[in-house]
Length: 186
Image 1 (cartoon, rainbow, N blue to C red):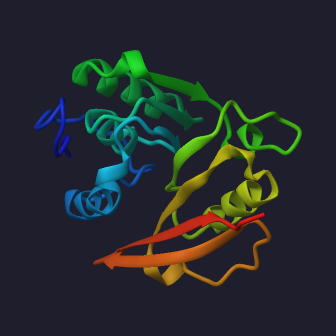
Image 2: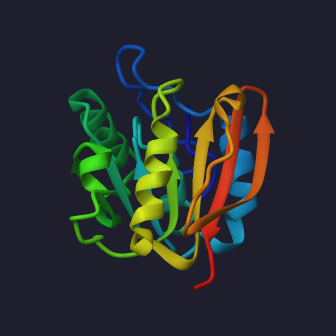
């Protein structure tokens, strides 16, 4: 696992000990950033269920103005902080220890709007659906032209009835599916 391009290109990243996280493959991560590459510079990035932090770190390396990493697991938090220090990208990063659903709770005021929200929860638990519903209920987290990007196993996908967000693209790379959602006009 490494940073693919940008200011931290080639830096190897630590994995979280154990098998509770599932880092995205370099192939899938490259494809994801090929899709958003032109707009990443200067953007604000939210990495939910951040794990190793590699996707938010890739965004920072490619010129994102800021990245917020939300994770509850103590070992993952330590790994994110170590990876940010190793890549020297911690100045534009904020690491938040929180349950994603408490973080996104409707009673909580969003801590800003984000151009990109990356959702990669543990698989096969329906957490991606719960996260999208939380974002749909409180769309203030997402900039008007922003995207929510969900990483799941293709077998997990199902159509969702949402009020404020709409699926506009899907891409599959082996065992990784990315689903892209944007805000509905209104």
